Image 1 (cartoon, helix red, strand yellow):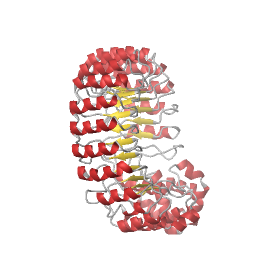
Image 2 (cartoon, helix red, strand yellow):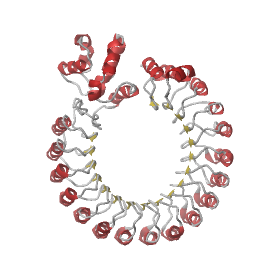
Image 3 (cartoon, one colour):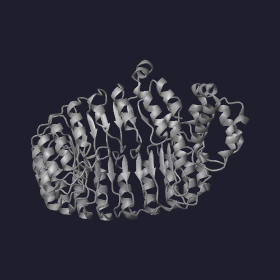
Image 4 (cartoon, rainbow, N blue to C red):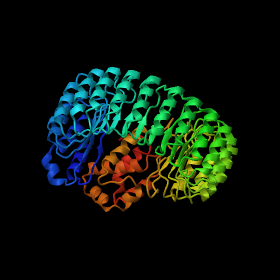
Length: 620
């Protein structure tokens, strides 16, 4: 397989991204490396050569890889995610093309000095991902020296690196001098209030950072107050993430005062900060004045109905907020009623997330009344909101008239067959909904078949999840299989049931645009099937993951006809496994596949066709 893939790469003129994961083995990867290491081949035969390389988690031939990278002159993006490499920094000193590097989990404290030394020489890298490398504050001290003088890196990710307040201080000093980094991520470290204070002092000087991620850093009230002070004078940060920092309600007032004067921030995330209804009130009142923020995340902050009512009053007058997250806030029917009234009057909000609240059927009814009037909301998340068939009935009536909502999440509610049937009636007439999540409900075959039936005429829905509805069995799935023979739009269809036999069909060959992504989680051994499917994906320079395209692609037919018998059988196996990993099927079906590929001597392939009809997912 590696030889064929390497040969394909030597001829390919369009491939821009390649992921080999763990499918080729050590020898196969070495063969592949030799291809992209040979600059003469790439220059002579690939005017538009491969520019992105991603390698698997664990391999031992680092010297060959690094020597290849030193020679290669075309690859600009490389991901070595968690690969066990030595001297990974050496090629950076000579390579002139790589601009984007993902070194997640690759560099440790031992290798970090070499990396920082290489980065001081390298003038090409603009994106550097070092998350989850355990470099600690001592490693950050070395990196800070690079940051202070580097003039090319614009994106830096240092998340999950055990950086404490000392490391944050080094970074703050460097950021006062740096004028190129625009996206800076320090998620899930431990900088604390002292480190946050040092970064706040840097933000008063730095005017290039536009995206700052400080999520889960134990900043606390003191650190948040210092950051609020910095945001009053900083005019560059547009997006700031302060989730999971235990800010508290009192300091939320300080942040609110900063938002009143700040003219740059468009997105602020404050999820899981124990802000409470008092803090929410202060923040939301600031948004009556602020005219810049379009995205605000206040999930998991114990706002309750009182906080929701405050939010509603602001939404009636605010004309800039488009994305509002109030999930996990203990909001009941009264709070939802107030919000629903605001949605009727607001024409700018497009995404609302009210998941994990206590809407119930009454709250769903209030929202339904809003959806009949509002024409700006496009996405609604109501996951685990206590909605049953009565609530869905009201929502369905509204959605029949609504023409703006295209994405709705109703997962983990109390929806049964009646509710599923009402949703199916919506899909019969609605021409806007493209994403529908009904996972983890109480839908059986009856409701599922109603949904399957409506998909024969619906040409808008592209995603449907019915996972973890354990009343659904193979009878309902067969209804979907029949539907997908005529439906040309749905691309993702998800099921999950412990009772599915391993032999059930989960990909359908006649879907003209794409094969449905159908997952049988629990008992179906899909891992090996996906491994075979990935082989086809890696040959995507001349194969398409669609029966319709393969059937009409003369290039594929010629490749198969001209290949020697061993390679020919491999390619046909890959195609058939990718299209139909659903044995047992009759030899007549396989004969039709071979006929579409212009393979006339069917009997030459019958032995292995018989074999793959025995066990689903087995690799040959």
